[in-house]
Length: 133
Image (cartoon, rainbow, N blue to C red; front, side):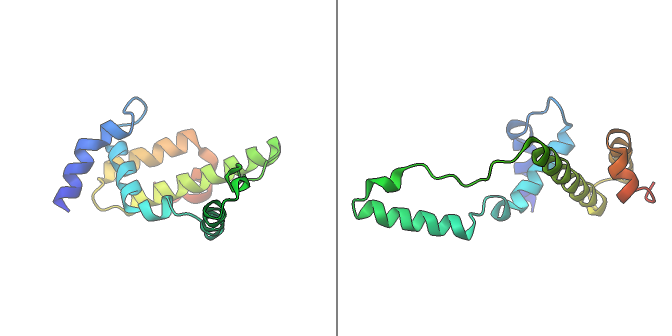
């Protein structure tokens, strides 16, 4: 655990630009990323299978296996905006819950983050955290 703290303190500002967020927030984000590394960078089963098949095809001399493959579906502007709002809301709720549950974060800092959420995203605050402050 002490090594983890040293790494977080040393790399928080290097890996996450301090222009828009505080050092403590950079540190929290980096800590979250380190703790969830496996989930953040996990390949889906279908991608693993596709890579395996393509590797075998290339080894057997089939050059067409090198053609680009698309892994995503094109969304309409409406779908993109809806999905963007939905995922942003989920991410903010998860982040605030993580901040609230973290015993290392002071009550004052937790209240500041909740007030910032209330100011910037009042709809998310009202729906999920209105009874906390």
